[in-house]
Image (cartoon, rainbow, N blue to C red):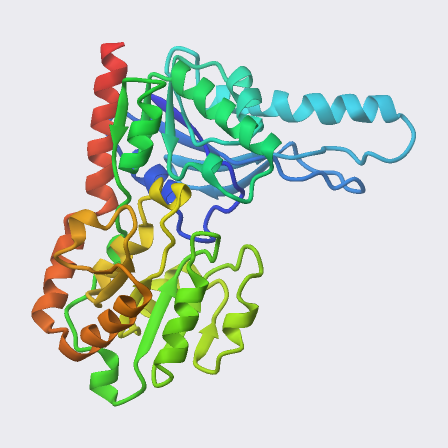
Length: 380
């Protein structure tokens, strides 16, 4: 079997996203001869020549590639010919390259992550026998979407899900939503990279007598409860709050005015395990919204692997971890839970969190996911 995966952003290698881990593990499964991950086209550079395809990552069984927006400069004489070449050559190059890699209609499975307008073109461009749609977060629930974009997202989610051999989701909310379109809906949560698994150790502030460090790692988006973090920073000026990740909406301004709040920006993914291990308490200050309910928090598994205590708001994805995670129902409870974690966490508790995470690795998760998908595809 040949797998052709599509992810809706050009961010391979930047953030350690779930799709990268899934692609890497799928490429190692028995029966998968080659996996090609296609990313959205590289934007056109009107003044430059370029190859029709851009390669971002290569291993013997996994290649990450995208089409280029243009092959020849768009300005100058022969505009009609230039337009024709820029329209046709990237499509021809992708078709021929995939054929050279052994992709045929009879052996190709498309593994798609919506939403993106390019998916419709890719489905027409690549002959295939089967299709899997995987929903990580339901982006149609983003409050920031315009009405037109929301309608387009809802439409693509529904049409792709109905046509797919099966749909893979990562949350109970998505299972309920997408089972309406396709009864062959499989639930698999996120998982953890072994790089995040640590040996149990004392909290850093206990070891070195420094100020406690409370940490949040992840995208700063509409799901992030910034007023809650501000409350924590003001109520506990003796604690430092460290944030790491892109600020998608430039929303951190007021929070960063507080003297005990630090924002590191985007941290290279190979440095994230060490960063989390430097925290005394890991924070999950997520709002309870339709969007956050569609998620399986990747950071939860990374936090567990570090062994550090975790304090979370009441959000989807934490229910089965309540014996290992302090779940706070109010801002006051959130602050109190941080105090309790700093005062009473033990090596035994750290070991329990690490042991739980070790049973949730990407290797185990994707192996089970692949076998379930193959069972559905074979039955069809």
